[in-house]
Length: 313
Ligand SMILES: Cc1cc2nc3c(=O)[nH]c(=O)nc-3n(C[C@H](O)[C@H](O)[C@H](O)COP(=O)(O)O)c2cc1C
Image (tube, rainbow, N blue to C red):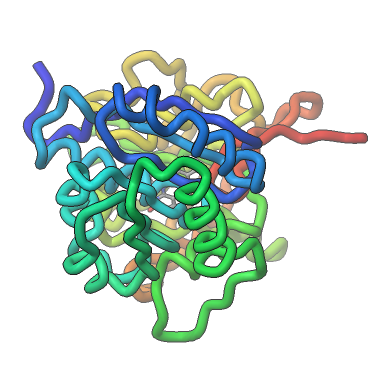
């Protein structure tokens, strides 16, 4: 049975190049496949990637939550093009998030009123005008969501900062420990960094919102497991709220009991050296007690919100 708090993951249809700026089409499925075909082509030709989530079967609050999650998790801030009848879903999906979630919103018919409150540039354009509609939409996006460098200033929206930080390519780790009852605990983290060789120190940052915050804070040890290219599914499991993340993962314990994932590219068993408060995260600095690594496999990488692989030309 699905949890009432679970967020639906709608089917997605998409067109265009993976790295182009995204336009999310929100509207009844049949309308998208019939009326908007030509518009999709015009957008793709203008260098946009078009993504259409299927929200048809979901009741309004779930559709809005699914849309919000989709927009939040995109590797850069998308624009939204919505049919007039889907405007309320977009309003609900964006509400409470400030101007940060969408680069621009286009409403095909109807009114812009509430959407304007989110601070993103809004265009209301009469639908069903064929080429004139496409020209208006493409021209507006060129101005409102250009393909130029974006700027973050202290105090402005967190989304832009996240996008800027996402330009730093990282590996992916699973950070683990044991809870008070000895049960294994772990989550996916890419905030791992080397700190010092002598003494041997490393760090990772844990969101204060983590359900495992107290477990890591009270544990005296933790382990960092660096994932290899074949372990993307493991990264997915340890980033989702699943009851038992260790269920289908082989692991072992060394001296401290912190779970060491079998076959990880590298594992670092650490004694907690210091925990530093830093904004909405805690920085865990660990003294490395033992490390093991696999010299041949490629790492799993993370860049601009997506998993990547090493590519040597
Ligand atoms: C690639 C990737 C890297 C992540 N890095 C971190 C991180 O460094 N710190 C963190 O607190 N959460 C990070 N997360 C998010 C957590 O894995 C995710 O929120 C997880 O569900 C937290 O679980 P918990 O609340 O049970 O601890 C990352 C997720 C992904 C997919």
